[in-house]
Image (tube, rainbow, N blue to C red):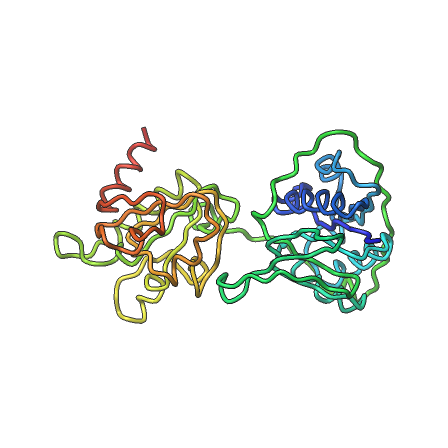
Length: 342
């Protein structure tokens, strides 16, 4: 019989991130389909808020590793906490939210425990009493469904796959495990945190809207001139008012190498598509982008897609978007910003 462990870490404010609450829903569903219970394992500086968030989830036991030395991301201490929780739970299947902190630690933990790990898990199901997972390959063009016999099996679950768990019902007591850290585990010292200001932060994975800017923003407009500064003001104004996440096409990102004007806040990190990221926002709005396949492939998990383009025959018009507005993006987004200000 499988023993399922749900493993998560808290954020700096003591709460669990959204992807962790989505993975908690997955743990409950999988354990139910396997006719077994599951165990919760938490890591962080203070676990009181997280303990309240996971109440009523159906877990049979809950363990925690907490303390100031576990309040921040550090490989040497995190891997010891993960190893202690997996051994305490006697876990065979470990479901973990795909955060940057645990994505860095889990491969090493799998090696230490003689297990296997699969990342970017996009689906989990039980067929005939056998646990199977889904994973995309070749930039989300091929999907594979498979299982493994080796245990323990670590699964890093991507965001946007399962609904978010909302804590309700009774809570269970948490047993705090003591993890002794050696001098070598404390060698790395965290001095503090530096975060970009809200005006420069353009990548927001939890945003409800993905706003994508295409190369048309920096091309010659109706007056025969380019207006990159005006484009920057319009786009940044919209992002500031809506707190949307910003994406771009490869052509826009690479224009600097071609000697063409660029948007100063755009980088390869914003790139969406075959050579970029595959976000999972509820809604997406593409502007000045032609909707070619290498770019659109990154949009396949957006629930509602809309586009603004002057060309009625662009790629978006070929069934790749729910709504296409044939209009000037400069005029449309200027009007949208005016409405947002009113």
